[in-house]
Length: 491
Image 1: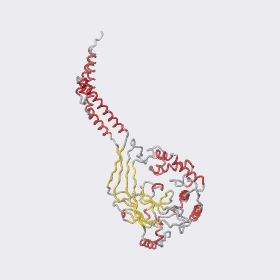
Image 2 (image 1 turned 135 degrees about the vertical axis):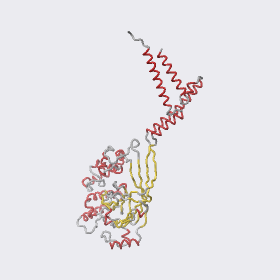
Image 3 (image 1 turned 180 degrees about the vertical axis):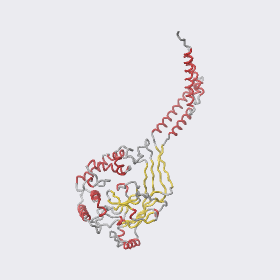
Image 4 (image 1 turned 90 degrees about the vertical axis):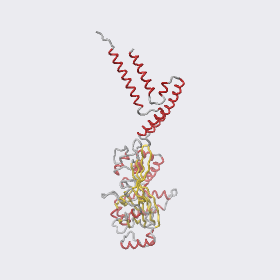
C-alpha cells in the first residue's frame, strides 16, 4: 500500500514539474485535455527537438574536427632584425689565382680541360642541359674533394668584396664569416649569430640596408665550366643553413639589383589541430629518423632541410653513397665522379624518387614547424656600372690594388662586377596566425542558443531536473523510513 502511494506521489510530482517547467511546449502538451491539441503540440515539439538535435550534433562534430581559421595582420615595429645575407660565387674555383704556393691550380686546370674536351663530344641523345647536369655533378664532386684547399683556389672575401655599407655605415671584410655551401664551395655570410647579437634596422630604404659591390671574376671559356656566371645570394635567418636547391637568388654581372624584403611570421596551431612541431630543438618532439638527423646536424628542426635530407638519404639507400651536393657529408661518402655506374645510379635514383611516389613519403617524415620566420622579396634591376662609375672603380683599384680584379677597361668591369642592395621597404611584420575555428566557449554558447531557440531551455532549466531528482529521492527516503517504522518485530 505504501509502495503504491509512493509511486502515485512521484507521478504527481513529475506531472507537476512538467506543467511548470520553463521548457517551451512541454507544459502545453501535459496539461491540455484535448487529444487533437496534444497531438499538435507533440508534432511541433518533436520537429523542434529534431532540429535542435541536428544542429547540436553538427556543432559538436565541427568542434571535434579541430578546424582552424587563419588571420593575416601587419604589425608596425620600432625596429626589426636584419636577415643574414650570404653570397657565393657561382664559379667555386679561381684557377688563375696568382702567387699561390701549391699545385692545386694546375690540377684544376687539367680537370677543367678534360671536362671541356668531353663537352665537345656530347652524346647525340642528350641535350646540352642534360650534359651540363652531369658536368655539374662532377663540379660538385670537385668542390667537395678540394674543400679543405678552397681558401687557396677560390675567390676570397678580399677578391670579391669591392665595397660594403650597412645602415649607412661602412662595413668591411671582418663583418663576413666564411661558410661552405654544398655545390658552391666557400661562401661569405653577413650578420650571422655572434656574441654581439643580430644587427637590426629602424628605418626602411636602400641606404639603411646592406649595399654591396661584388666582383665575380672574369669569364673564360676554357676554365669556367659553369652554365651561368655571377653571384648566388641567400636571404635567411641566422639560425638556418642556405641551400642552392630552393633559397638562391641569382645576381647577374653588369647590373645593380635592388631586393625589397619583408619579414613574415607564421604561427600554426599544434596538435590536435595539426601535426606541426612546437619544440623544434627537442629530439623527442617527433618520432622520425630524418627529424632526429636534422636536429643533430643543425641543433634545430627545419622542414625544408628535412625534406632535402629525405632525398639524399634515399640516394644513399639506393646507391650506397651520397650525391656530392648533399649537406654535411665527407668526400669519402660521396659517389665518385669517375665511376659511371655510381653517377648513373644517382640520376636513376632521382628519377625513381619522383616517379614512384617516394617523395610524397617525405612529408610524413618531415612535418612542418608550428612557428617559423620567412623572408619574402621583390627584385628590381638597373644597368651597372655607368662608364663614369666604371672609371671610378678603375681608379679606386689603383689606390687599393687587387691582383685578381685588376680593372683596366669599362668592358672588363662591366663583365665582372655587380651591385646589390638588400633592404626593408617597410619596418613591419606580416603575421599569419591560426586560431581555432570554434572554441569551447563558442560550443557552449551554440548549445545554449539552439536549446533556447528550439525548446526554450536555458542553463537554469537543468536545475529543474536536479530539483525533481532531489524531491524523488526525498519521497523514496521518507516512505522507506515509514515502512521500517511500521514493521512488526517478532518476539
